[in-house]
Amino acid sequence: MKILVTGGAGYIGSNVAINLIDAGYEVTVIDDLSTGNTKLIPKEADFIKCNINELEKLEKLIIKKNFTAIMHFAAFVEVEESVRYPDKYFLNNYINSQRLFDVCIKNNLNNIVFSSTAAAYGVTEKKGLISENTELNPNSPYAKSKIKAENYLLGINSKKLNFMILRYFNVAGADPKMRSGLISKKATHLIKIASEAALGKRKHVIINGNDYETIDGTAIRDYIHVSDLANIHIKSLEYLIHNKKSEIINCGYGQGHSVKEVLDTTNRFSKNKILIKYGPRRSGDVSCLIADVNKLKKIINWTPKYNNLEFIIKTAIEWEKKISNE
Image 1: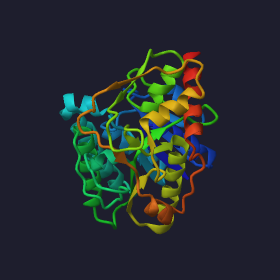
Image 2: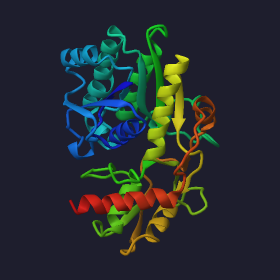
Image 3: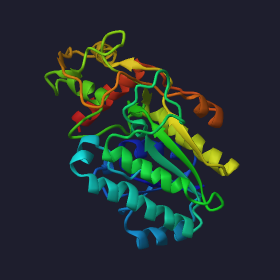
Image 4: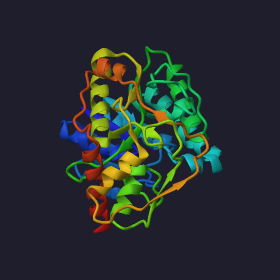
């Protein structure tokens, strides 16, 4: 089967492309390389440099290749940048996605796996796990742009389209075979930052807030290994093809680790012990965000392979070493 992957030169898109190829799918990657990196695109994939707003070019490609499904990752994803440039995020993440979906429907490409985010739940002090039915309360233009794209899919006649909306919690780690990982000049992901500090690229790591109502006072998050997330995409694709039914699913492990726990674990692998400093809480941060993954396991019968914080961090550090030596 032929799969079109938008944003396949990015962190998550490239990992999914790799795993699709491993599973025997024929993959075409499109990416305009505005934030992606050609080093991450699997050699076995057909790569076309293209923005998702180049609709005529996309339509010709869809007609020519006759894809079974599209996996849509192409988006801007930096929360802080979205606050500064909300129109940029609205245009690319919503308007361009909407137009892409319309081209897909027009040309009978009616299986879509959409990359979304747990940022959709926003600032919530809901006790317990976050389910797909938790009220959405986005507090950034990034999250709002993703929800608008979700809502556009939800509003399309089910006879025209089947989709899986996947809301990611905290994605981390790198491909165990070191074929892909996170490349970022301005890292915002905790485990990426910790890996840089472990290799001496940073003098210290700041923990924002140590007075939360958690076991060590630092915020707790649900970290999922990027390869397990890639597997969720493949199983979601199989579900769509066989069941022709649309779903929204959380992607996480259903368990959390505190910021301090992540840094302490990183220090066990690090020759350069990370210097930890404490700063004030960031606006909008909550004490604990953990996914309810009951629907995930029920719908696609998914079992994680890399649900181990040490393994997640170890692959992240190994990847950081690799890109440092290139």
